[in-house]
Amino acid sequence: MQLGLATGVPFGLFWGVLVALQGGPGADAGPAGYAILAVASIVAGALFGLIMALVLGHLQDRAARRTGVAGVVAQRTVRAAVSGPEVLARVREAAALLPGGRLTAVDADRALLRTGVTWRSWGERVEVEVHPQGPAARVVLRSRPLVPFTLVDQGRNAENVARLADWVAGLP
Image (cartoon, rainbow, N blue to C red; front, side):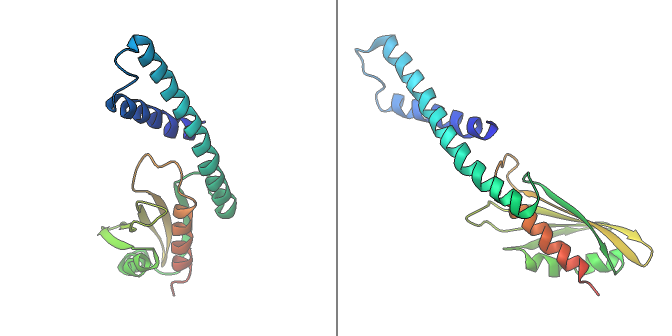
């Protein structure tokens, strides 16, 4: 439902404005013509929203079953066999594992990565947060869409976290 409204309402508004800019219902139609245009725009938006909700909802549901992450924000905690500073020193290797990945910032206990734009996404923000535990470290990995109002990511963030979790687990 949320997906249908998020896609249908803007489409309906866009449709109504577009038709109005192209001359509207006609000069002799009067207020009733604009009322019909408004209703037609809302119906067109609702139908478009329904179709988009079905298509995108199916893609997101399929990705959720495949990755185990229902939303667009993915998080996982992994134990690293090396120290926290060692994980952060080698985090540039992790960025290379992500599509179009690059390191954007590193401080004492975390690193921020970005991924590039693909046909599935406008990019993601990936955070690698390190918590030292003796000679090892607990690493919290988070990936979220770069565009904050993203509703469907087709499992992209879960894939980012899975790649980084494998990288952390494989550190010697």
